[in-house]
Length: 492
Image (cartoon, rainbow, N blue to C red; front, side):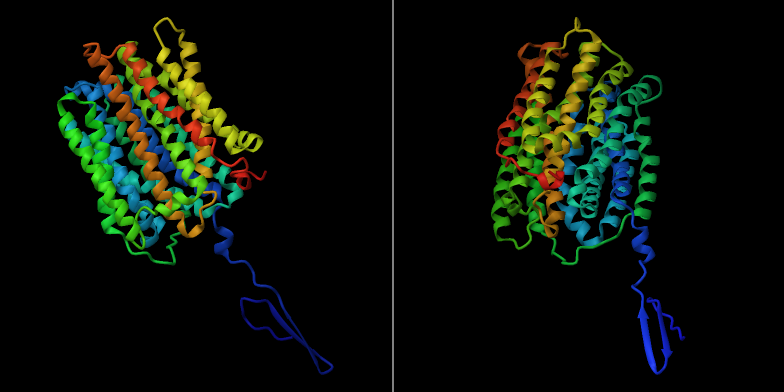
């Protein structure tokens, strides 16, 4: 018997002039055996999502205290939140192209580092304008962090595992809203609001270490040239529309707001003309021809207006109208996150039982009714009832976004997945910011109509009902989903 070294197990036996050969199949490589499962990848992405969500929820709790330190009104400081979303709207469209060209792993790590740098700048801010600049830097990191992380996850997951993978990713991310309000309230009340930004540094370092270990640095095999002209036009359009919408709520800057909105509309029209001619536009408008992607984006955008407004309005109402401390406010607003966290474990079963279309229609009614009920809150309401309404609303909203975030990619082919995640995430973040702008604007208009300088319960009611009415429109869009839409992802 003779042996030869090879990746195959071979032997040869000679007997009576005859030779018998045997070749065993190749042994699985260590690389394939060590490749992490989708749960591991989802949890690594969730670390970044946790950092981002913790930062946002802690910041809304701290806004009144920060406003006092910067000698400005709390509703006016909403521009610090908008600056973050402005950076997201400008830079998210480039995330897919950056990941395809330089590798998703590398871009994800750079995004986490930029987000940490912006967090340090927020902690060192000495005025409202300096805080806005630092938040914009944070937003540049966030613009790449979440969509590229989601792209890595989507590329790693089979369609049948998508709902489970999204749950694994978002459940740890929901710990940010759970921990954020009470933790932020304690920091603001007993330490200093600046500490809320320092906690992003150790979380970011953990994300970098885990990403370096578990992510594959795959590039898109077909290189697409970067659409610089489309990027600039989309940046001008989205940036001007978003910032102009923010300024609408400031009476002294209405002229600037109108100018910005008109500029954004013109730039948007120019981009649409550009996209028809470009070979590889930064926003692939042909994705709107995919039914589940189009309907999920439209309905999800309408619903996210409420999701963006609620974390801004609830802490303000608890502190300015109820007279609670930052700690007490944080303990109350934790209800929404607890409801959302509870629903994540049930979302897959609900969707498999009723399907996407029926679930989205039914839960859309319940979620809108729950958040509209926040406009009925008054001092004579038992705190347990307030907590319960907020928890139920959070649970319904959580189910909605689990459904939207999965069915959006049901019919998208692998070649366009990076463009789809960038497109979808851009409008997801844009409408979250629009929710803040609409909520703040409705609050300011109600205050101005009643000649009040400090918002009262009636002003908050007007704001809650305005954003709830907009999200109610999503129900009519949900009715256009096919009855069997997404059934393949649910194993139905």
